[in-house]
Length: 58
Image (cartoon, rainbow, N blue to C red; front, side):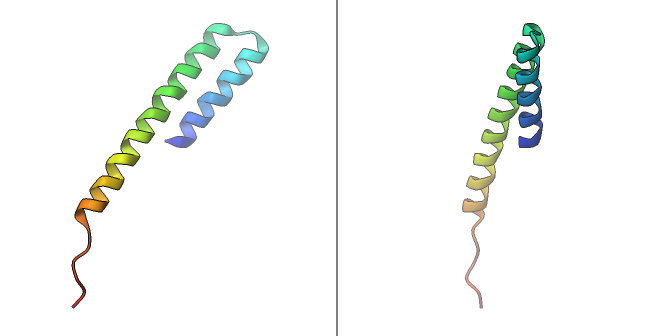
């Protein structure tokens, strides 16, 4: 998912350099949404892993 965000960010930079403002802003918005979605899922995953924990080894 982080790879997709990076891809859209690069597309936004290239589109901005070439003068395609609408495409650049759209790609930047998509990249931002995907990045924040990645962060939310990362935090949920870390919390779930911490709550699950591991029992004592016998």
